[in-house]
Amino acid sequence: MSGLVRKSFDDPEEVRPFEAGKGELRLVNLDAGPVGRAVFEPGWRWSEHIKPIAKTDSCQAAHAGYVISGRMKIVMDDGQEDEFGPGDYMVCPPGHDAWVLGDEQCVVVDWQGFTDYAKR
Image (cartoon, rainbow, N blue to C red):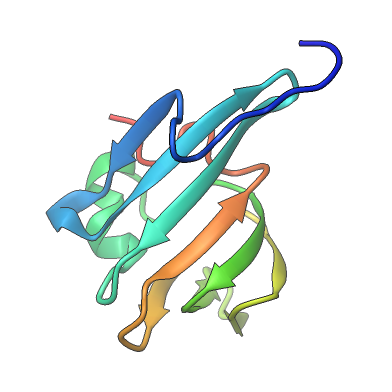
């Protein structure tokens, strides 16, 4: 692609549903790689709703993302933890669990970690 590019998460190249209807990932493909918008429903937890798909003990994706709405807690395998909410940019290395806090959807746009995320 060269020049002006327009993509829409409303018309993505791929949609990947999470286990138990707890959200989905929508991907648009760019020359630099895919960009994803994930909607994590209340009650979503990586270790329950993605682990069966990923088949790893913890999330092994590195994320560089922006939280649009909702809140998420991330706990690294080494015990480091933080919470992210609207307006927060996050860098999250591989080796973590995460879950939605509260009763609002958590919507995240990620430029790095969704290439194989929830890919069956």
